[in-house]
Amino acid sequence: MNLLSETDGETAVSAAVSFITDAVTGGRAAAGNRAQTAAGSPVVFPEIFSEPRGVFVTLTENGDLRGCIGYPYPVLPLKAALKDAAYQAALSDPRFYPVRAEELPFLDVEVTILSLPEKLTVPADLSPSVIEVGKHGLIAESHGMRGLLLPQVATEWGWDAAEFLDQTCIKAGLPADEWQKESCTISVFEGQIFRGVHPWQ
Image (cartoon, rainbow, N blue to C red; front, side, top):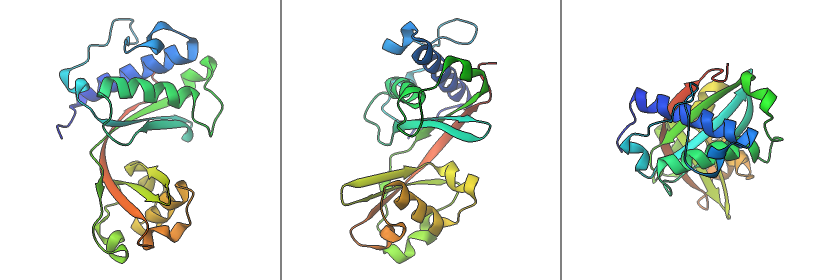
């Protein structure tokens, strides 16, 4: 997978900010893939944004989660996936009420570009030994349920690999120890993280 440059990351954050703004305020870009910088000029998307990528958009307020939605797998070009993830994170995360325009100056934005998830093939009891906290994100799947936690979550909470596995299963609505069972599939991925701190100010 080709990595995004820092400039590409800045473009991703600027686009996410534009899409969120338009989603919250009813602007025109919410209906398509157009985006504008804070100065009002169009965001110019490099060619890499035409490649299918997994992506998550995370909103926080004073360090607390305010919305997080995304695509674990590369099913859409990055530009389109980023637009939809930004829109959904602002308005449709079922854990939160929709973001209001007056909240925007207090929000931070994080865009995480995902590598293709790969299933762990080691025995379950060895899973913690091959998971690198801070590098890997996790997906737990079992009995038709799925949960995902981004790489930065384990670091933020100070979890070791076993606790990270537990918490990913809990995110899926499964028992914490589900990852130890043969019926559970654990996949790992990496993420490039780009942040915008109070980008609306």
